[in-house]
Image 1 (cartoon, rainbow over the protein chains, first blue to last red):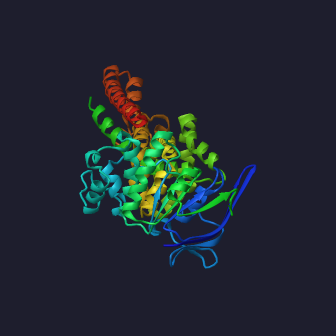
Image 2: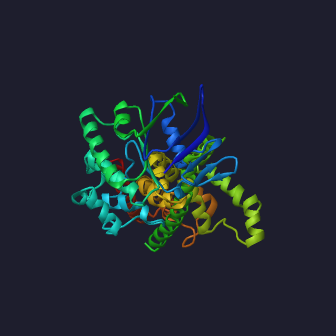
Image 3: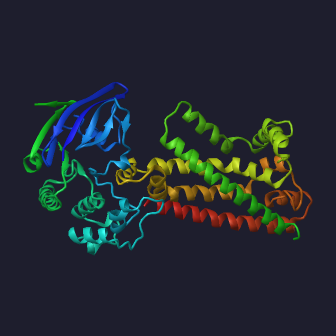
Length: 221
Length: 221
């Protein structure tokens, strides 16, 4: 797996202008993009997922073109087949754990049933030891369980790659190191390629088979 | 007593139709105002809220000008569909829905603004199209607010008097709603009849308000 990214995206807010202008190729299975907050890391991840659209450049995932401004190609977010782990997990509060995990398995107008027992859901519930809380809503879960649900939800569709947005930033230090261990072992088991963004040097040491540093919208050597 | 029940039935029919129209308009316009930035957004909000603060007679006059035989909408309806809304129960529906729309619209807008856009982004990443995102994430998270507003709008439509009287008149059994029948009963000295109808409508409205408050509280949790 290989991300090949070369994009420019400008944000204009009153009194502030920010330009993200990056070009890199992530060849390792795990790649970490590291930089201070406000450097444009989240924007970069959102552009790869198709949640924001760059003005120029292109984004390749392996052989697949996800975005090419010159050729007018913009693959919609829903067709990019990426897993995205949001900073606060963005679990659906109105659905239980089972429904959250099954969410991406159905495309229509209806949410999965409360008792959804698709084989894929059962498999991830078992793999991440979530069977005991399968019927609970996200607000009833511990931080670690939430992270596992979010990860299972992202993985259930067999994504081509996983994007992780500051997965430990919101946690206190003790929980952070425990969750880091847990995420590492889960990721080693599933073997899916990933791109992680963080401002924490410890994440670089742990997950950065390859790492890049971003400052003020630019890649720095 | 012969007047009370047909009047109540008509009031309920008018209020139900008006609520159905307000539900669709309230969701559509509420979503528009909550999510899209366009020139004149707050002006549109103000115009749509106007029926809440304008004297009902002024509103009724506007509707007469608009829907009357020489009004531009009324003339068009007459010419193309041979339909005139003035002095019909459908005219009462139009008056009631315009008067009560702000109640649905305001709470729908607030409810949609409360939905975390990241949850919608998460649904897109998981492969959903825009309609599915709306039906499976946005609407389920906002529906309590929408429903609370809808109940208030229903109660308001049930009690609508001024604009309805001007647009639909007071034809017993045809356009004479309960609130208008109360007025007529008092005017003609039928105090017993008036008292019974007042009791009926008061009990109905209290029930609706209690239900709306419960929904609003449950939604805030």
